[in-house]
Each structure stands twice: as C-alpha cells, then as structure tokens.
Image (cartoon, rainbow, N blue to C red; front, side, top):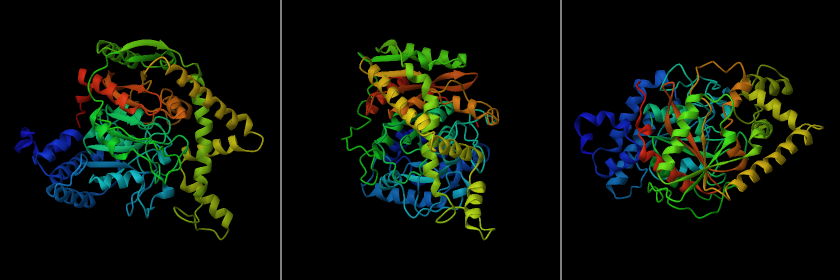
Length: 493
C-alpha cells in the first residue's frame, strides 16, 4: 500500500474492497479520504454512467468519519469505512427508496432492510442508491422511470439489468462494492456485461426483509464486487438467519473467504449442453470454453452433462414471476403510500389512474400477464403447471449434482447490446436471461466471474452449485481468477 501515498491518493476509488480494507488497517489513508475519492469519481463520471438514483454524499462522509473513529478505538471489521452502493429496492431508513418507479418516487422508508442494517453495523459507508429496471423488471436497466444506466465499457450500450446501476457503479469505480437483487439473473447478467463479479446466493441464505418484492419465491439479495474476494467478504457480512424473514435459512455459516485457496484438484465440473443456446454470440461461446480449459489446467475434471428441462425454464419463469408480481404489486393503489392520482372524486377511478400513471409499461405488462395466469379458469393451465415444471427443473439439477460438484456455463448468451436495440421486442429482451433463469427457479447459488472479451466487451462465466455451496463456488472462481487477468481489466472513462 506504500504506493498509495502521495500521487495515488486521489485514485483510491480504483482499489478493491480487500485492498481498501488492508490500506485502512495500515493507516495508509482514512475512510474519509477513501470516501471523498469515490465521491469525486462519481462527480467525474456519473453524468455519463448514470448508475445512481440518489447520491448521499453528506451521509457518506458522516459515516466515514464515524468509521475512522471506530478504527482508532480498535473496533473495526473488514467492511468498516468501505464505500458502497445499495440497489434502490433495498429499504434505507430516512433515505429515499424508489425502485426506479414513479410509483415510489418520493417514498422514504421508516426502517432499513436487514442487509442494510448489517452493513451499517459493520461500519460500511453508503454512497447512494443504485438505478435499476423499475421494480427489478428488466434485463438492461432501460426500464427505469428516471433514466437508463450506461455501460462503462461502451456508453452507448446497456449495463444489463435489473441491477445495472450496481454493476456499472462497481465497474466505473464509483463504489467499492454494491448490493443488488437477483430474481432471474439480475445480479449475474449485469456483472457479466460490465466485467465484474456478481453472486446470487442460495434462496434464503440472505434475508429479504426490507427488500421491496418483485417475485417473493425467486428474489435474492447478493453482492457485486471487483473480484471474488470482495464478494466473499460482503457475503460474510450479509448472510445469516433473520427471524423477520420467514424464508430465512437457519443454517450455520462458514467464513466464505476460508476456501479461497486457488486449488481445484479432484473437483468435478459439468458442462451442460443446453446452456450453449442457439443465437449465442460466437465470442461468448469461445471465451467460456477457453475458461473451461483453464479450469481443467488447474486440476478440475470436466464432463458434459444434460439438463433437459432447461428449455422450459423461460416459459416457467414468465408465468411464476409475473404471477407473484401481480400479487405483490397489488398494494400500490394510491391509498396508503406512494404515488396517488387525486384529480377525480371517484375512488375507483383514482385507484385505476394511480396504477396507470404510476407504473411503467414493462411493469404493467407483467402485472397483466400474472393476473391472467392466476385468473379463474386459467390457474391450473398456467400457474399450477408452471409450478410442476419448476419441480422438474429442481430434480434435474439434483440429479446432475450427484455426479458433479458444480456446473460451468456462459452467464449471458450475448455481450452488452446497444441502448434501445431490444426495447421494442420484449421477447428478445426476455431471452437474454436464458442462462440465468433456471438457477432462480431451483433456488440455487450461482456467480458470474469475468472470463474474457468478445467484440471488445466483457464476457462472464457462470458457476452454479447445489444448495449452500457458496464456499465451493467462490473457491472455483477464485482459482480461475488467480490464473487469469480478466478481472483486472478496467474501462476507460
């Protein structure tokens, strides 16, 4: 960290979480200096990247000063004084939480999500709230009611979604790490498109209390970091049982950094043929297969496997997720909180107009899809059958994991595409998540790690494991990361 003295002090935003932690411990710089560097970086690039809905500069500096005092008193942890961004569907007390929707444009929660409380308790510093597709419904971060986020690698392209703000902020150096949410790939896909690491934990490993719901049986909060070690450190902080979340797992937790050894000897990896889909860009396929060769060179045994129900995952997801969305978003009626249409004396017209003007087109599309799937006469044909298919998908994964320890696939079938290219064709947009959706349906953990470039843009490799195999997935990703240089590539803004 000695090189950080002097000429690099204004470039502290470039550090990984682990590097920043080490520098703070050595007193090479203070948390206030680190936070100021990130805030200056936000000033420099945010008008082009647009990864934040809200920047909380004053709060960040106050928290940083508090973190410095805690460190001086010997009461600091790994995340004390580290600047972060939180996706804007994670509730933060007294700080606007919008879901990037007009419906909640002025909503200020009276409580914080469990994950936010855990991070604040550890002394992490909140730089602000990250832009996203409205209510987490989208794959490009273009469905935000406020503005689209731009990919730092090419400002004319999307960062992915729905946690596009999180991935773009970390890639651009605006935040040391971020939290996103993943319902069908919304952490992993933008991580892939922005060249950073994103982890979707096992369903229930991280509390969803205070996460504004899209699809409750699919949503999961997870970290976005500059490298694998960063994601492991953040997962240590946010994982664990929470009595406020009825789906929270009561499992004992390991130290997720413990398995970062770089050794893969004896590991069995499966390569599912169904994930190399028609229409996949050749450069994505090539980069993923080269990454598989690297894993073999590190001692892993790779064998082809089959997950035949994968072809039904997209249809299954787009019945289950909109159905749950239809139920969860019924609360936004203009009565208790959020946007309320007032230009009528009629209650029913007010309620209809509230939803008409408060929600964007993609949210309304999914509400209608879900309401139709749950309606009388169609419930059995659609929703019940989708749940049966979900069971088959889970059984497919369970069968394969009797043979292998983890699966290797592309994260996204394409690299970042131009802004506006797919907005007029929802089905083409939905197909972008074809490699990530099955994991949410089965409730499994998965992560994306940079594995190369195609057409000058980042490509991500996805690692999928059985329930509660985060430590193993992080270990595999770490070994790959140590053997390659892809995670060190940075966009030039």
